[in-house]
Length: 518
Picture (cartoon, rainbow, N blue to C red):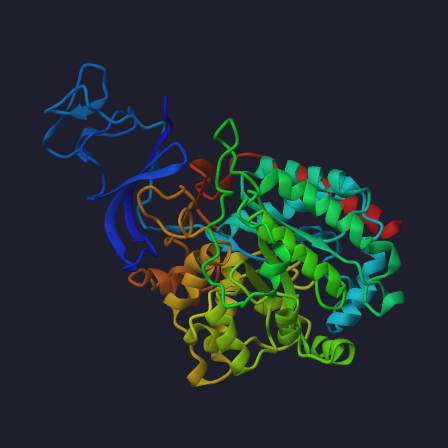
């Protein structure tokens, strides 16, 4: 029998649909992993449940002899709910979508030797420590990072994973084990580094892989998670064609596992950065992505040093280098993009390239503030990423979304972005960047049931009750009261339902101590 959840008495429902409707005093029904119905009124007429009192049911319903409510005019056509959630004084909205992370980095949070230095020094300080990670570390760090994301309202996350001590299969297996335990909707960005310090790059030799090995391993993942396009016969020709391609097909990665409980993993091919990957690998990864209908991602224009590196090594700005290797196209999104000029922003918009904006990390590493207002004005698809927990030191999506709004406003009154624009980046913007806006990012009938709720009866929201979006983004961030991912109840009444967080954190502390002692 189909599992059904009723969210009743919703005070505010922020849909993020095409009309950006905000509904008041309504209810929502989930069937299996999809939104089945959204209704006016605090409760539907037809209910089968022992948990509903007669006074809550409309007058044309009555109590039958099973002590459950049915619609009076048709006793055979009734609704049954496995779970009923009272959302009185709550804001219900689509789950946040985090488009950039490095989950393993929460094992080296606030590392004193790297906490006051810019990006390149930060990386070279931490690379030797990360080289000592063991496969289990990827499990426990992913679990802690994902739980932190979920409690802050995230229901979908990308993890850009670019180091594989112990081998790709073992590392990814441990991470996916944590994903399944948490219940989050997951996108694996298979990162790669092939340009070592000895060859003019930044990472040490022990953390890079040979190009052939990277391609072999990415091919293996593409065959598992991608969808090969038989019509793409001449990949070399595709790479060289006009890059104004913003009609890249929707991802086919929203299918479910056989048990229909856990969302399928979406694969993203993600060579890590211009200073850690060869030109040849960038081109070949794109060929593979086009063959298997996959999204691509890389860090780009993150700070001035990266611009200087690209000018010195390639005699090009980072954006022009991406164009040369065939990466200015609709299946691509870039992370950071702090140092893009006006012309480059317009080209991003024209080609359909998306952006993952990571404001806290950019400020923490003294990289600068990305020109997000200009990107939004140019109709670039912009999303929010918390970035790794060694450069943000947090995995809080609501806090990151608020920071995205505030740091733009700090640039001046002409750079103000509204609370509505900001919330869109964290929800529908993320879905568009991932090519998933046909299934997530909004609350509409038929969409995946990725839904969160915040309790307005918190001291942080006192006085803000009449402005639900403003309350979430202008007031101090709080944890969610409710999280439903893929139709599965993960957080209820602010409590995590699917694991013992104390035990997880205890194990995480042990692994952090071990890592730093190796």
